[in-house]
Image (cartoon, rainbow, N blue to C red):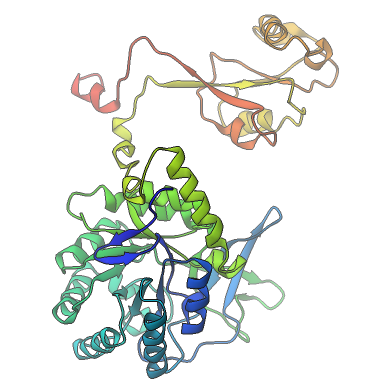
Length: 445
């Protein structure tokens, strides 16, 4: 079996799966149960001057029968005494010396940073994570994302921390910014050991239309919160990859955002993450999801002939390019299998109204569509079991693709409810690859 252990900027972990700094990592008892379930590490819920949290603090979006596709919270940092937190950190490290315990911190002044760093190290923390990403509540007090959105401030505070810290320091970045490279590079200039991202996205979850109050409702009002869960995964992967391939960054990354299973984790690792942090999926399904994550990642690495997680880190980065580097001569076209088509015609509607009008319906008047005779003959040759009336009856069921008009946008394949019914067939181009940048260089664009 592949070796799942990782070294995250000097922090050893038995596997890359960590709990993110959030409610699942709020107490020592929780984290010890998580370690028993198989988690390799945990980032303690952010410590700072304890605050009072509101009641009614979570909201979610359900879609098409799936629960908690997107999740929102207006919860802040720890509301438990620091003495209690540090006592529990020490107990966790005593009982689980081989697991990674990282303490998330958020304070204001240089003196406060010095004090809380020392207390964290005295408790046995393996590393620190600086919370420069919280998008609500704390940012109004000059912390959280208000730091992460100001690269100069982020750099200065990171340099303060690096003066005092004797253990690795991760800087947690906010996605609520124009270009993630700006704070990432600032963290590097400040001396950070590694980066973690993304923190949650500033959001409003919905509106109670009877009371005219945003959600989640706190009495007769609400506020913006932090958005996370499966819906944010594409945003998180883009930002992780942007930093992983930037030559001015070059430090380890802990990926966060919508990770729910081993495949999500593998994708983040392939895009440059050394570890991955999970929150929403644990809140939804519990700590034991890590069992499938461990088994799935192990099997995947074995199938790929990789002996360690290290070999997967950043494996996809060389193939993440700018648009101008993509091959303009590469072409795919849609192909519909009439044997599995259920005649829902979603592909036809999507193509007509949302794409390039290259999918058509069979008609009793074959001459109404250019090339339909040839198309029908090719279908009968490739799929001889298809009945003639499936192509030509009063209520046609099987659409067909005008390959000369198909631009290979993938929309029909994406909306088709039958797996494998519509596939994108690659068409070889004898001219070979040519990018927009190539055309510009030749004076053709």
